[in-house]
Image 1 (cartoon, rainbow, N blue to C red):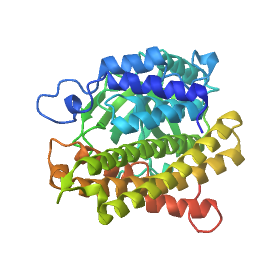
Image 2: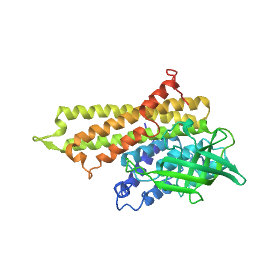
Image 3: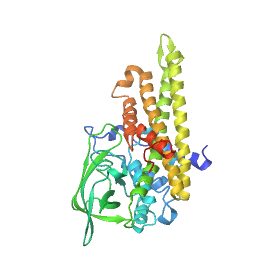
Image 4: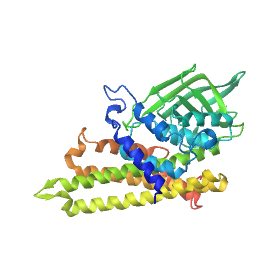
Length: 383
C-alpha cells in the first residue's frame, strides 16, 4: 500500500515520463540513433524530481528517502522502458557506494550523483558474464601515485556513456572497488550489440588506467554482494512494472479487437490466459515488495543478519519476477496475434527486456539455488 507521498511521487514521475520521447528514438544500435538516452528527460527526473539522490543520505546532499520510495520510481520506469541511465546510475552505482558510505570518496561520489549531473555505473562482469563475486579476475596494481587497472569488463550497463565507472578488481587476491573517471588515459568505452534495445551495454577496456580506491584494504566482496542484492530488488520491481504494462495493454487490446463479431476478450481461451498472467504478476509483485521492505531494514541497520535476510529476499524476488515477466511478455504477445510480431508494435521491446532481465544479475535457476542455500535447504552459497 503506497503512502500519500509515494502516490504523489508516482504521479509526478508518470507525468514526467509522458512528456518524454519514449524508447523508439534511442534504440541501441539502430540506424539514425544519435543520442544514447533522453538527456532532457533524465535531467528532469534526476535534478527536478530528485530521482538520482532519492536514497542518498542527507549528509551527502541527497533526499535521504526510503528504498520503498525508489521502488515506486523503478516500477514506473519499468512500465515505460524509459531510455535514461537510471539503472546504471542509481540501481548499480549508488547502491555500491551506499554500502561503502563511510568512505570519503564514496560520499563525494554520492553527492555528485545526487546533484543529477553525473552518470555512473558498476563495471563488474568480465567476459564469462558471471555475476558471482569470486569470478572477478581483473588485476589492480599499486603505483607510486595510486592504482592502475588492466583488463576488460563486459556487459556493463551504459558502459559506453557513463562518466564514472566503479570497477571491481583484485590485488594480492583481495577484491576491491575502484573509481575510474571518463576520459582518463588507458580507458576505452565501447557500445556492445544487445538483445534488449532499450538497455545499453558496453565493454570497458583498461590498460594501466589510473584509478582511485574506495574503502580500506579489506576485501570488498561482501559489500559488493550486498550492493548487487539491492540492485536485484530494484530489478525485480522493474520487472513487475514492465509485466503490469504488458498485461494492461493486452487487456485493453482484447476489449477492442473484434473477431467473429465479438471482442476477442470474450473468448474463454483469451480470458483464461489473461487471468493466469494476472495471478503471476500479482505474486511477483508481492515477492518484489517484500524484498523492498527487507532492503529498507538493511539500509536502516546494516549488519550480517539484515544482509543475510536481504540476500534471501532478493533471490526469491528475482526468481519469481523474472519468471512472471517472461511468461507475461510471451503470453500477451500471443494475445495480440500477428500485429504483436511486427517491428512497429512495442511487444517485441518488452519481450527483449524480459529475456535480457531474466539473465541479468543471475538466472532464476541460479537464484532458486541461492535462496535454498540461504534458507539452509541446499548446498550452494548464500553470500
